[in-house]
Length: 220
Ligand code: ADP
Ligand code: ADP
Picture 1 (tube, rainbow, N blue to C red):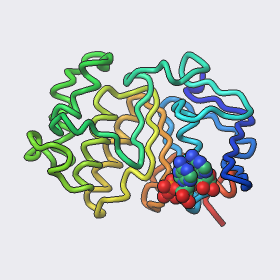
Picture 2 (cartoon, rainbow, N blue to C red):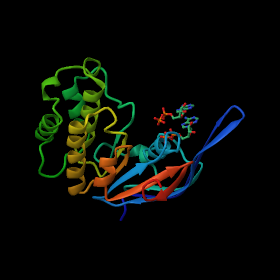
Picture 3 (cartoon, rainbow, N blue to C red):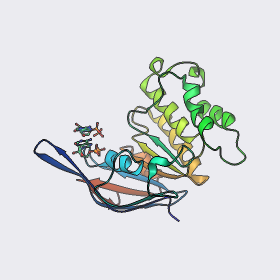
Picture 4 (cartoon, protein in one colour):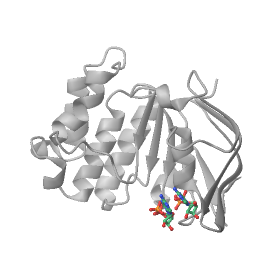
């Protein structure tokens, strides 16, 4: 059974007298273990799709199932991990405590010590030496790597990430992609909105968004 199953998702935003169709009858299914790259120009609807899938926005039409149910808002870190563009790190917690937060709240993957998993992730992402810093004491790229580590620490059933390599050089971007693909190998369904062509080449499937419509394949 797909981890995500959406049909006919539509979302319009009204600003004053102007209406924007951010999602136009989007159908999407993502299986466990599958990595899907979502590509499209700025304003095409990628962030809105992720927002609907995680329950931040309610669709105007369509059906949605994420994991066991139709309302993603009830899902915890083991079921659904999101890396939003704004990252969402908790400013009052050190980077290490941010990364470990899901382990306090959710269910670790079978046979895996989440503290050990967190250590390996932050080592791989070259932020181990920043463990005691607060988010505002780290660069945006370092904060982004901490946010991805936090999302992966429990090997969630579904990972949604909005431009997760946007603030990285190639080496750090590759380390993030390696960890995402490793999570997919253990069953995580992954949807990445990304402009990174290396990420497209490593994904199982590329989908393009244009004016709120979702089409198979990379942009022509
Ligand atoms: P990106 O294109 O990099 O995803 P954003 O998601 O920040 O950038 O914004 C894309 C477009 O959506 C921008 O034109 C922005 O002004 C508009 N937008 C985003 N959020 C809102 C909002 N809450 N209200 C009005 N417009 C918004
Ligand atoms: P992308 O992530 O591909 O850049 P978005 O999903 O952010 O695209 O935006 C899709 C369209 O919806 C854009 O026209 C944007 O301005 C609009 N939009 C997104 N969020 C809001 C919002 N909260 N209020 C009004 N308009 C929005």
